[in-house]
Image 1 (cartoon, rainbow, N blue to C red):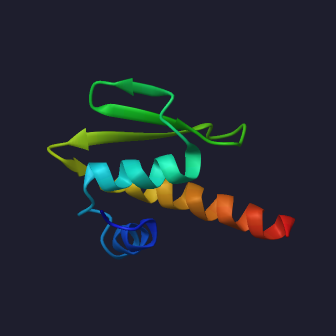
Image 2: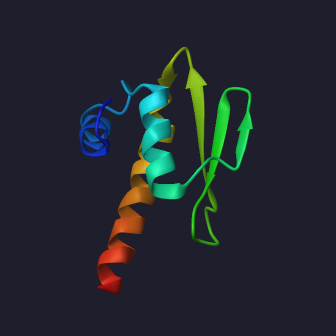
Length: 86
């Protein structure tokens, strides 16, 4: 099982080659369980009013690159806010 940090590094290096299951693990770690699992889509709630969700899609076992990038931006925003609280 890949560690979250390792998956994040891979996501940043090559967002077009990320397994859906790995992206799902990262989203669960940062945002909790998917509030919706509809077919190939999983939707995760974020703590902000704008852009209130991360929507990822399973496409032949891979995550779509734009969805990986969207998740990375949300994770970065979450980490910046968390660091500001300290």
